[in-house]
Image (cartoon, rainbow, N blue to C red; front, top):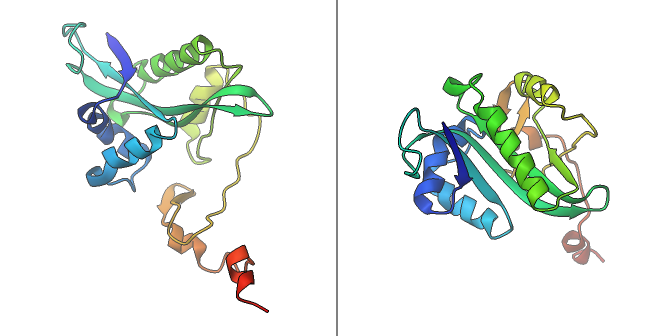
Length: 187
């Protein structure tokens, strides 16, 4: 029996790390809680699904975290109030058991309960199984998301199926870019 709740304590947040690390392998356990707390200050929420497997459903924290979602509510011109999912992952050992569907259903119910007009998420182009799941759940591809690192080393991107550090992608991609700071020194 799954229990889905927001991870609000440091201990709950840390319990989400092993699963979220499968989606974001560049994250470090040492600074994970601090990074989540910084995002929470900007409106981010971290939800976790705990599978209890016959355990007492009243004991929070008694189960195994099998699915994690990081999300925020934001207002957009195109969709109005939108629940945007930053991160959604189910433990690789627990997939195809309904945990991802339960989390997705919970997120959509949360969006509706908070008067959102839209539910939205991005998914890496290499995550074909996730895409098939989203399409089965009636989500539709409505746009493309484009990303450009603005500072060296600030963004880990995925190329194909392997994670490529931002400094490798950065090399040779950006020539000279004028910024207000660089233009102040000319004259």
